Length: 310
Image (cartoon, rainbow, N blue to C red):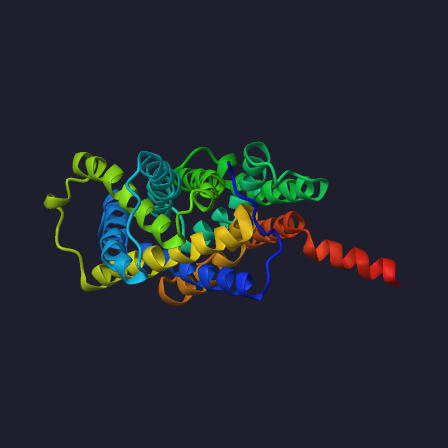
């Protein structure tokens, strides 16, 4: 049974949300650097594997140890699949075909999917009229960005965009599924450690069969540094923040982080990767932003109160 959460965020929750968005925005930059030298699945395995190793070693510092009961292990495997193995692989694959800033924009559709998933799978995050409007705006933004590439046929760019939308959908399921860890009495750092450990075990066979990493050339110093940053900062540290925020504020509030992530991802891509985005991409992001504000509802409620008070 899912535990109740506080759906109204305070200063601490907003601070965690902003910090998490900045850290995850950097992940698109690190992937953009590493993908030039290393195959997608290997990038993902190094990311979660190194993060799992560090977090397993650090867990005693928090006075904790990993749960070993069957229920916890099953939950970790499902969470690792939904929230790491599938979306991370799709994101890296997508970034072989589209710019890192655009990839982050497409992931901003995560709360749009999250509204629908949470409505059917939870009791306290049901869809409301304003959220329906938000979903409509959000999908309109996605359609605006995808439309031009789809009209020209299914090419590499469209496949990259489809991969990012698939990652967003997987994140939505992961965000809702992850709520159960609070009810199981598992702390955020334990959940983060279990998730990346499980996803490492799930990915090892695929990497051995597909990438055969022992045959790959030695990556550059920049790539190695990017992989380390991706694992320690954007995975280990980020998921401690992620599950703490999920415990405090719920799945829908957590998924709002994807509205803020594109800001840092776009800035890093433009400054260091010489990337550029078309006007329609910013227009699509604007529609997604309006949709997310409608889903959140607070801005609209405050405007309504202000109008009624006049």
